Length: 246
Image 1 (cartoon, rainbow, N blue to C red):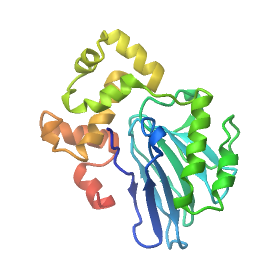
Image 2 (image 1 turned 180 degrees about the vertical axis):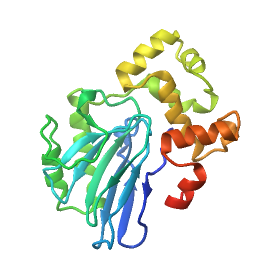
Image 3 (image 1 turned 120 degrees about the vertical axis):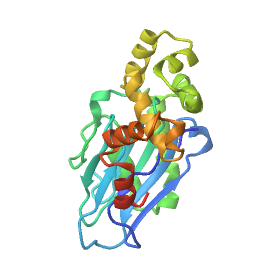
Image 4 (image 1 turned 135 degrees about the horizontal axis):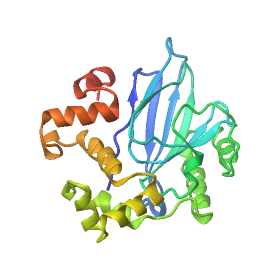
């Protein structure tokens, strides 16, 4: 299945903890992971979080202030968020294509305001606030099931097929052929179900693959790879490795 790479952190060490938990078995086809990012002590400098485009949608819970929550995702470019010197976030990362809520509700920036949407995110955050992360999976799974029952999340067999066959996809034409669609049908389907045009989705997925595969397996040459990586990530591959230790 699809394994998006973790985002970049400007601060590493014992005062910052990032942890992932797998979803319960019944949610494994819609949820990539449950995750936690928190400080264990106040940091001497602001923490910069370099969020990467991965075509995933996240439910975000701020357990330092449970009124603050949201639905988040990036499109085709990374962004850097200043989280300050003390924070505690928990989230649900969905696979591409499974989020079917109103795309206008998705935030692509720092989430710092109380949640005013229709999802029970604040209630879930209040339940999570007294728990250790290892104890949170049942409450997070319950939130996901609520989203599925109310039509916000569903299994997306077409996108899952794309993700399972990424190694064989080199172009939008390959993607359309895999799904037995015309390019126009593919365009309409992806825009409706993911918010992406086919070329943009392929660009994001290919950069994500580049974190785990040799660039010549994905790009015509080194120059093409560096250009695509910098356009999406904001740094060249060498700059990114040096800055974030990836």
